[in-house]
Image (cartoon, rainbow, N blue to C red):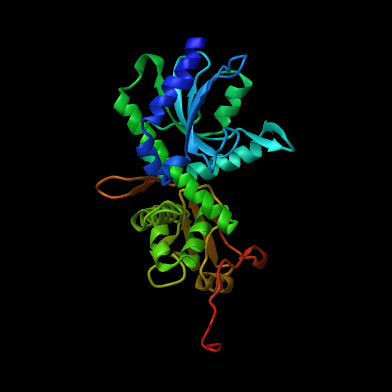
Length: 343
């Protein structure tokens, strides 16, 4: 146990610190803000020792915030390099496990942000398996994604360094979206992206196209096209002839079946199903066309990146036909203000 403690607190922690320059660059933080620490328990040794790195401002301790952590399995059969959130929270001075509802919400949010990374790298996995102890189970629930290194197949040192840098990039995406979530007060990634484009300056707006929601314009287009493909297949299976009208009208499809005509709105996202963004014209059109209209949301779309360009696959489809837009479910997220009369 003494040797294990030295390996965790000293050797493994020093290995992570040796990547400090690359990690701070990937995280877009100052070198003084990088926190690296290792713990194997005090007195009674922990069954799951760990080494972690994070922004000290965002995660000053392992009981706060998001971080990357090396978690050792209870039986010593392997190590996970995990992007995780603190499994406990401070309740009036007492640490207690987070509620399952809170944990699930955070993990869905994080995996939506990391979807492109996870789909393009098959080595990234969830869930993880650490053991049977209470701490092990708590750590498993709060792991968004992880690399696994079996004890009998530890990869070369440079391979592990590369994984550390990739994890830092993913953690940076979490931090960026965490800031946007706090600033906007929203949880839907699509709504946050729309708000960011409205609120930011021209320079920041260009930046948000590749940060914020985490997708570039080509990637976003790939997601939209995948949603349209699945929606067209769904409508075709119901016997509708589908016409793509998205380029010229405030609806995506005109679907006809005998004498029936439907106007369909399609939304696609890499995240879980949630709020969607509608334009003024879309709202007005569907209010007027009800009940000859519908909404199709394709969520959990998988996005991969390559030199040939982004590629979107899979997705889960939810449809509401007819679709009645209930005014109480609409919320303004931006306004146009006319200044010609005051200046």
